[in-house]
Image 1 (spheres, each protein chain N blue to C red):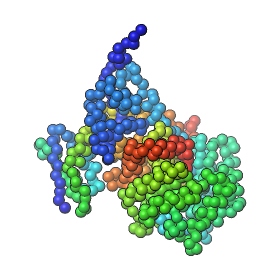
Image 2: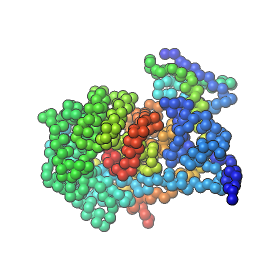
Image 3: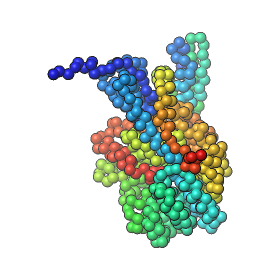
Image 4: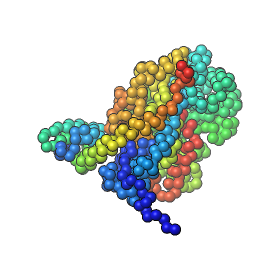
Length: 496
Length: 101
């Protein structure tokens, strides 16, 4: 028995385009990246792409099958379904389904550091008027459970939250008590310098499954320069704290963030080697933000996104080299971007969502009872600009969501509808950050050709796509390994 | 600083396409778009000395071609794009305290 001729298996040879976007590759302008509405993609020649758009693809050529399988075109409607595309898109936007999962409790603005780049408006250690009251704490817990999310990440921030650890304990116990009936999945994180950590605090964190996030800016000279204390012992205290936490909570319980100053950009290898020396397997290389004290000292510590991208390429080279040597060390933001590029899964990072994560993915309960859609909005308020305050903890979440601040965010919060973003090939993998654009450009919609957010995202996506396409098999394996690991380590990024 | 002028055939490219392409240059250049009966004329004036003017006209012409292709894609897919988005996200939940109201 013979099979029927090939043409018998081909239906209607006409096809129609599905929503797609494209971008010429910066390293090869004769080829383009094409992305589907759910973020699946392929790279092909621009000529072939133009043939596809103008209806000249032949169903027998491989390009036709490639585009069809990625939902860039759809063939005979009697033999095709778009259900998988809907499923892919819904999966990418999974973070929308339940509302905010990240809830930040600012228990005190007090801090014993005087970091020049501090993003928040810290207060002196003795200024207890800047601590969260018990009444505010109780109202905030009530509001926390008004949200529908089945999984709640509760992050304690400051200032230095260890300076009001009694409030951290009270909030934790109130939340756990309430959760006996609510049955949500809880995750507790504390962002701290880890200085002056007591045995009792560590025991409490161990008993309640806390994860710790701290700041380590690199080698001792750089960390002490960036994070000054009168005793010039910031590095030693942080490293002591990390070691004590690991002994009690386990090696993976502590993650660290690096804030990059102008001086940091000269020493990518030294910073990364410090993390390796201390036994970390992940590092977060975070550029400066235009908030709080960071804005006041911007001229001294600031740099351009172009400078940051040069640093990033050197850092990525070094990280890949370290991985080739057999030591696993990943960069967390890179891991998340690679996960978006190389897997179909959603992510938990609130700054890279569309619709925006501000207010839809995260809520901040400030020490004084005010509520914000993001830490950046809180920082703007501390600088005197209350454009994005949602309301107070005594009010309902419906009041917050209909507040003028939230309306302003929503009006500029869908990347797919923003000028220039709407046509960007990376938009299915990117996000809208109206508060960042407001802070940097004075306009929550923003001007993409001069947007630092856009330059950073485009630069990072281009760099990673090029490394993945042109890298050695070993480097591709490393990058793919980071991407796949991201699917089970999302939470840490939410606190970045 | 000298202005670079790029002429594009108005019978081939529409104003919207040319404007979208030119907008991408507004980080480094002041942009003015003029028209006469035959051409759309884009004038690019560097905002600062040292701006990269290498193959500037050629880059803009390629970007205009890409914008024309985007317009073709948009005209064919914008309806289905809206339908698919709505169908995919219809299930998003309202806040808990609104349920049952």
